[in-house]
Image 1: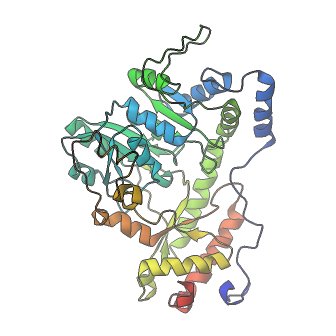
Image 2: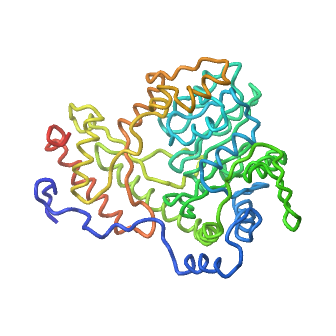
Image 3: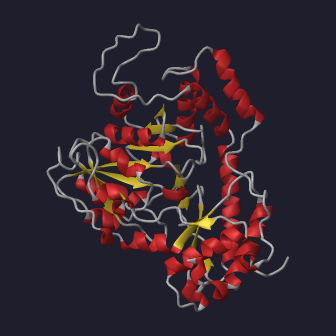
Length: 426
C-alpha cells in the first residue's frame, strides 16, 4: 500500500465498507423480540421480560435489586431520588461526562456541583471532590466514564467523612469492575443506559441497581406515577408520592435480555482489541493509549488515545493538532475525533443557569450560590484538548481492522510534519 497520505491522493488505509456498526444483531435477538407479540404482554413493570431482565441484571452485577427503565437518564434520576436527595441539595459530579449525568440531578430540583478529573484515568478526582463540599452538599455522583470505573474507595471514604450518599453513573460501563466488583454493586445506587450505542443495548432504555431496601421501594413507585401496583391485585389509581412515567416496553426488554447473554463475550472482544492498540501505540510517537490502573477492569465503551505533538518535535498546540489530525484520519477511512468539546459546566445551561421557569432550580429552592467558572476544571480542559476517541473498536469488527488502524496510526503520525501546519485542515 502506498505511503502517500489519502488527503494527498494516496490510498486510504481502511477501505469503504470494512467498518461494521454496533450493535451486533443476531437471529436470536430478532426472535426474542418477535416472541413478545405472541406473549400477550407488551408493556408493564411486572411484565415477564421486565421481571426477567431485572433478575438477570441483579445476578450479573451481584447486587440485591434492579429496576428496568425507559432510559439511562431516568435510571440516573431514580438513583438521585433513591439516595434521598432533596430540592436545593448539592450533588458533586464529574466535569467530564455526558450532560445527562447532571440533568438527572436537575430533574430532582437539586444542584450539580462539578469536580475536576484525574488526568490518568479521566474519572472524577476524589481530592477535588472534597474541595467542593459545602454545608449544602448531600451526595456524590461518580461517573464510570467511557467504560473506565471511577476510583471508588477514596470517594466512599470522603463520603463517610462528610456523611454523604454516593451514587454512580455507569451508563457507559456495563460489566466494568473495580477491585473485582461490578460497577452496579459499589455504592448506594447506580444508573445504566441501554441506548443503542452502549455495551448492553435494548435500542433505548435503562437499568437502576441498589442494595438499599428503602431506595428500591421508593424508586419502584417513582417509576410508575408514584403508585403502588401489586401484580394480581386490582389497581387503586392512588399516587402515594410524586412519580414519573419511566416504564420500559417488553420489546426492548426482550432485546436486552438476548444481548445480555453475549455481553461478557462482546466486552472481551472490546478489551482484546483495545489492549492490542494500546500495546502497538507504544511504538508510535505522538500518540498513546489509555492507562488502566491494576485495580480496574474497563470495558471500553469507546477507545481513547492521547495526542502529543511535542513528542514529534512539532510546535503546534494540542487542540489545533487534534482538529487537523481528525481530517487526515477521516481521509484514511478512520473515525478519530473528539467525544466532547467542553466540560459539562461550560455548557450554556449552566453558564446561564436556565433550567426551567425563571431559572429553577437555582432560583426556586436553592439557598446557595454555586458558580460555574469555566477555568475551574483545567484537567478536564486538558483532557478534551489532547484526547480523541477511535471509532469501531467493538464487534463485529475484529483484529483485521485493528491491524489496519495501527497501519493508519503509523502512516499519519509518521508524516505529521507534512500536515500539522496546514491551515486548510483547521
